[in-house]
Length: 330
Image (cartoon, rainbow, N blue to C red):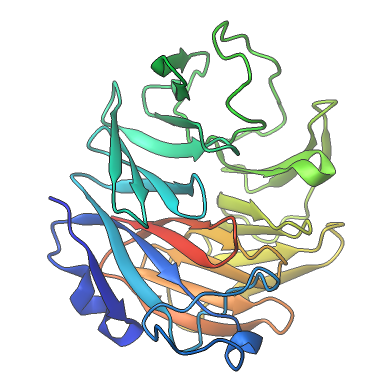
């Protein structure tokens, strides 16, 4: 079944529908200093200007739209463009939804146990993976339809996927370019920082590591904040790093990884399952196992919003224009 709904923040519970469904949802929010500048033509859907990248979810005008109903747990969401959202669910499907036209593309995987998805920067390729230990990439080739490539080599489940370049790279020979070694526990999450030619990983060894894309070496292991698994990492355009862990903490480091801020919910929220960070690093968002999404202002450490869901928040992704959040739950 496919359903669509729009609700005010106060009506979130009613908009969620029956407890047996699984959804990916999209939030639109407006920035604090844009409140006086934008005309109130559409009070239910307000958007931020491109010059301001931090979504302030504490403001009026935040809207919640159900964009896809899956037949299994929604494990991961990502953006293909500012208007297209991709998600994978444990019914063996990868769904791409156009927020403007409501059109959908459904890709059927070889396994139902999907855990992660990713889209190439040009939006022409989608990848997914999970408990079959395989990364599958599908690309749209003009005049040829879709090409599907399965990349094997992992000895364990595929927990996260990111593209380093557009879909024009040669995926046919399936050649492994490099293996990055250093963690002593399952690597749970990856965040790419192409501007600084690095990427960040979080793992079940309680550590967050920074890697050099060119040399393949680990350039930094960030100081341990607590002895708990790191479930998710994210990086902003200006290089700030965010991580969420089993202790329910969200930690934010500056671009040089010198100063850190530890953020916690003002009410018990359980394990932090996923994080996202605004493009300018001013706001950070955490999803928690106790069915809640929380937003903070990083500089002040102030919790600006707590939004309830009817089930665990599993994945968060900020849109490329910095105006929306895609949220998966199960």
